[in-house]
Length: 69
Image (cartoon, rainbow, N blue to C red; front, side):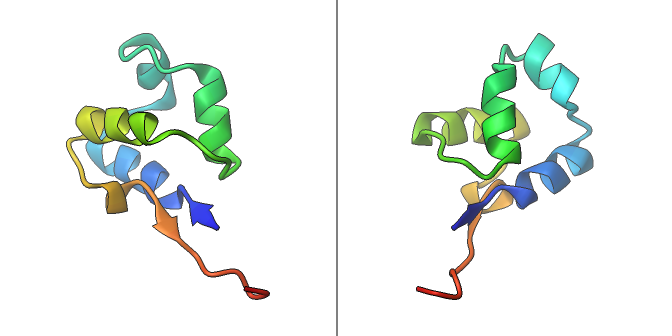
């Protein structure tokens, strides 16, 4: 599965809040909810977050192998 836990830590380290994502960067609250739930998002969304946070993809997401895979 893909985990976006790195995103929240990166945002904390960069001083970017969810409120700022919505108000300043026009990120949809629904998109943030999808990330919180580790649901699928587009590569475009990942790219937008990389630009906003000036970071690499690995700073936003990681692959975690499922136990049953």
